[in-house]
Amino acid sequence: FLVPSAMLSAVSALAAQNMGAGNHQRGRQVLYYAIVICICFGVICSIAAQPFADQIVGLFVKDAPKVTLLGGQYLRAYVFDCIFAGVHFCFSGYFSAYGKSIYSFIH
Image (cartoon, rainbow, N blue to C red; front, side, top):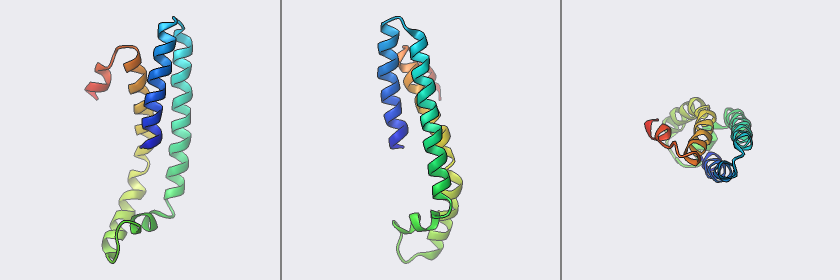
């Protein structure tokens, strides 16, 4: 979640600057490019984690093959959520910049 969190901060700052300057189109461009970056990063991480899920879990769990197996299965399914989380974080930063943080709160 490091990249989506960084995007939230970046989108919030850049969109707020553009909103203050009255350049709403550029604020929407910031959101668009941040979403593209998060989707690309999420897809790459999701694909890269698929063949190595068991080994990734194995870095944190020693001498528990059943936990490693089940953790790997979970990681293979969960990793796709990172794509959607990145998009959500981008929108959270955008709406916060425009003073509409209630949308992020409702989530």
